[in-house]
Each structure stands twice: as C-alpha cells, then as structure tokens.
Length: 319
Image (cartoon, rainbow, N blue to C red; front, side, top):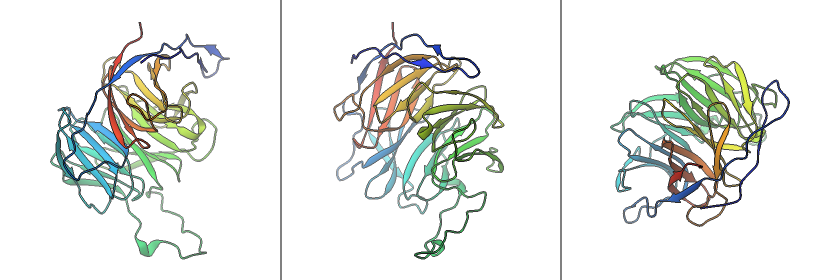
C-alpha cells in the first residue's frame, strides 16, 4: 500500500526544534484469513495480541465475556486459556515473556495475571474489587491502597526479569516489581510535566533496560531508566496507543497512533524510520490498533478494537 509521504518534526530534549528527515511511507501487505476460528467461536473487540517463541498467536478478546485464545503459527485454533476465570473482566493487553509465560492485563479486574506456558495461573498482581466493596450511591469512594491498581493497561519485562506495569487510567503511574512479584517502587502521577502521565496506555523495555511509556493523552512517548528517572520524550508520533519493541540486537520500536490509523517505525533514538497505514474498515486499514506484537522488524501483528480482528502485516523497509 502506498500513500503520500509524511513530514514530521522531532523535538529533542534541551534543544530547539530539530527537523527529522521526511518519514518514508512503508509498503505492507496484510495476510488474508489469518485466524481460523471453530464453529460458534467469535472474536469481539480485540485489545490484545502476543506471540510466544514457537510463533503461537495469543488473542485477548472482549466477546460475550473476556477470553484468551491460542492459535498456531498458521492461525489454526488450539485452545481457550482461563475460560471463565475470576480475573477476566475487561481485557486490555496480553504479553509473553522470555520463558513463554503469558501475562494478561485486565483493566476491569484491576489485575495482572501470569499463566505458565501450560496455561495455569502462577502469579497475580493487584486484586479484583468485590461487589461488596463498591460504594453505595452517593458515597465517596474509599482511596485505594498503594499496591492496588486502578484500571491498569500494560506490562513490560526488563532484561533482568523486573516487571513494569502501566497503571493506567486511574493512577497514571508506572509500578515496578522484581521477577518474583515483589513491589519495588512506583513513579508518576496525573499531569503534563516530564515524568507525569495522562493515561499511560502502553509500555515496553529495551535490551538495555530503558523503559518506554506511551503517554497517550499527552501525545508523547516518555523514556526512563530502570529506576524511573526521566531521560527524554518523543512528541512526533501522535497519541501512542500501542508500542512494541523488536528482539535485539538492533531493536526498533513500532508505535500506533490509533485514532489516525498511522503506525510509526522508530529507532531507539526516536528517529522515524518509516510510517504507514490509515483508519478504515478494509483489509490493510486499521480501526483503533490497541496492541501490537513485532516478532521481527518486518513482521507485525495488530489487534483492533473497532474491527474485531487481528491482522498480520508483512512490511517492506523504506528504500
């Protein structure tokens, strides 16, 4: 697919505006009929997609109820994981770690749920509020304890096993845990200053341990060291709904501005290497890309809310 080239500016911290070279329009193809669902099985909104080391595709969907589905690399349906699980209320994202554990971030349950590769629950972060805890009509809501999430959105894995949760719509912060699920620290609050957030919606970590947070409503990507110290921000990619980082050693990041339907390819310095896509309902167009998986630099899986689907994209690098 081809469109007009997009011209963007890159704002460098501490410097005046520095012009980024024109962003090259990238060609791409959408693989037809990716997922083969069994009879009487349907996708609703698809907020989450991830791949494991075998290339299996995991789809976190809001259908009649929230479900986690697994498909083989050719899209053949394999199984449902956690069917009718207590913590499955309102799916937000799914990620796979280096050991093929599956992590579901459930915005409605205020939980992050870790499954082992066999599909058994092995760790829980946060807690689902019980019906008896909900305030009666007219009563003020009781403040949440520090360890409780308030509509979390995503999880990232540091190179040494640390966990970073973007906690999300309510708390507007990032929470860091060690690999065993022990709370280490949190940073951020609602605001517009560096290190503050307005809906941290997506989060990834690179091979060096830097943390990239898609600060959606502030229309920027903020970059932190592993301890949460602000380093810089990128303001050239619209509102980042979804981020994914390719495997090393030469990593790139894809960022989706889902309202416009544009997806950006960036290097780790924030230089835009290419851009593609537009909003729409046809194959190869996008309806609110909510999560992406990028197992390689030129292969991208996108989960869409408005179009109730997952697309696999084969990208052609800009010349």
